[in-house]
Image 1: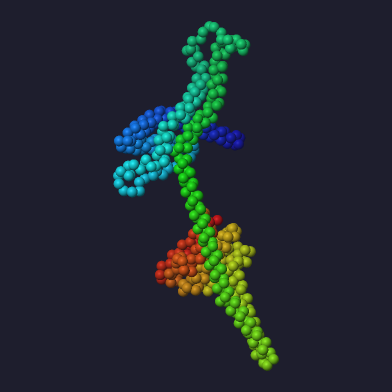
Image 2: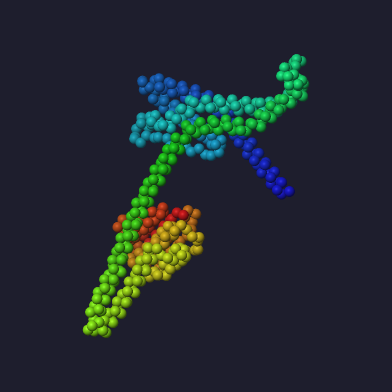
Length: 434
């Protein structure tokens, strides 16, 4: 029983939507016909008079006035066809004069393509409006006349003579036959009323949309494509810059750390080889020192490998990697990183390096006593925040330590901001898309 009530409610709601759309489409077409008559007279007259008198300059203000009037009718039409197309029709951008002077501002519509398209629509809209009006009036008239025929049949004259068609089909011209045929015709037209009215309204609305908003839609699509291309080029340049910075830093770290230790290790082993024959105890001490150098070199190489691709990030996720990172920092870290589902590896890697680089800068330059790290999943992506109570003065400008990190974030499609007033600490925020 519950299912039956639900089905009835759904059917009633569906019928209500059809009837509401039928009313919207009908009034759109019926009002479009007289509006089309008005616009074709006004626009065609204004255009003809303006073109005819443009040689004596009087035609220019007439054309401008006609274009302004056409724009008004276009604004009205965009508002009218929105419910028919079941979406809001955006208002296009009209060209305005950039230079000063009332003459240029007054004549600026003459150089605007959309203004001329509005006038073209005002002149030619009468064609689809008339066709749609004829179909809608015909279907509504036949539907109403056929379904209500039994109520007014008695008011019509009916000659005694039989008609040839009913006799040929074996029918007689009786009141019942006559009423039945007319009601059947009304039922047929009533059954097809919604699709016919809907098609007529869409035909008129699509013609208006083609001239009043389609060009602006294409213009906006081109502008969006150009903006996307610029963003892609910026991300590509940022990725190349971030990769170059990372390679230079890795080369510097290897040169300053493991490479120097390996050179010293080779020298110690060479000295030990010479000492074995003359002073075995000194040789053993040199070998022991060389072993210590080897362990320190291995530790530095492990640290560098964690900076390239930390295994804990790959194996256990971002929260575990940040916890380990906070534990190695020389400045106390207050970490707020709740468990989240695994993200795209590039997003997790970027978030990790943002925190790692920020903590490295805090430990080296900020003189901070505490740092707060927050990683939160938000509706638009991942929000990473690192704040300290140090001396401030950090910047994203080229030549500063955070420039490469900003390139890495932009290469991932995100944005990064730094607030670092002198003496008031630093707050770094990175938003990464998911």
